[in-house]
Image 1: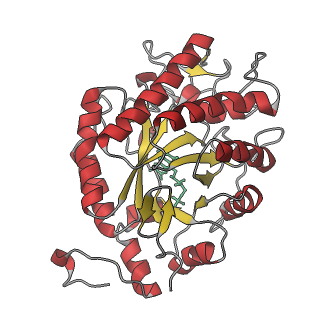
Image 2: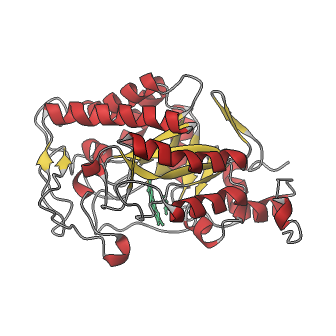
Length: 352
Ligand SMILES: Cc1cc2nc3c(=O)[nH]c(=O)nc-3n(C[C@H](O)[C@H](O)[C@H](O)COP(=O)(O)O)c2cc1C
C-alpha cells in the first residue's frame, strides 16, 4: 500500500492523496483577477491527479501584491472570478486551497522574468514592520502604524471570508519567503521597539494575531495551513529553534498543517541545495511539535516522495517546479507505486 496515495483527513476534509501542488505565482493577472492562463494552468494540474492545489500567493490588499500582476482577493469581482477555478478543482476530485499573502517590503516588484527588481511606483506604499529595504533594488518601506496593522489584519480576515465564499476548503497563510508575516518574525527585518519587536514573543505577536483572527472566521470543519520558512539561512536571524516555538503556538491556535519551506528573507545567503534539502525541517517540526507537516523543495522523484511520507518525515509533499514540467506527475507516481487513481476517460488510450 503506497503511503503517498493513502488518504489524509484534516478536520472535515479528506485529501485523496498526499501530493499537493505548492503555491506558485503566475504573475499573469490584471487587477488581481484570474484569466484564461490561470484557468488552463490549474485545470491541467487538477486533471493530473494531485490531492490538493494551493493556489498561488493571493494578495489581501492591492499594495500587498509582490507585483502588479498577482492574484488578489480584496473585492467581490475577484471572489466571483475564483469560483470557476475552484469548481474545476472539485470536479476533478482535488481539494481546493488558496495561499493568502501580503508581500510587505517585497511588494511593487517587477515580474521575475524581467529581473524582479523594485518598480519604485509613486502610488504604491510599501508596508513593513520596520523601514528596512529588502535590498538596494527595492524601495524602503514605511514602518507599519497600529492603524496599518489593524487594516492588514482585517484584510486577511476579509480575504479568508471571500475564500470561503469562492468555495476553497483550505486557507494557507503565507508566513514564509520574506513576505510581510515572515518580516515580523525575523530580527533582521523587524527592529521595532514596541510590543511587536525585540523578543521572540514580540516578533511572533503579529503573525499570531493574524492567525487567530483568520481561524476565528475560517469554519471549524476546514483546515488552516501555514507556510513557514524554517530558517533565514543567516546569522542572528530566524531559525528552526524559533520556528518550533512558533509552531507550538500555531498548533494551539488551531493550525492543522505546517508547510515547511525556508529562506527568502534576505538575498545573498548560501543555501545548501540538494534533493529534499528542506525535509529535515518538516521532520523536526513534526516530531517536536507533534503536528502534521508538509515538505517542499527539490522533491522530484516518486520513490523520494514516497519515502518522505512512509518514514513519517512529513504527512504530505508539496510539489512546485516538477508539476510545471509534468502536470501528470501524480499519474506517474501512481503507476510506479501501484496505486489506482482516476484518469479521464478521454485520456485512457494514453495510460502511464
Ligand atoms: C514560478 C514559481 C512561483 C512561486 N510562487 C510561490 C508562491 O506564490 N508562494 C509560495 O509560498 N511559494 C512560491 N514558490 C515556491 C514554491 O512553492 C516552492 O516552495 C519552491 O519552488 C521549491 O519547491 P520545488 O523544488 O518543488 O520547485 C514559487 C516557485 C516558483 C517556481
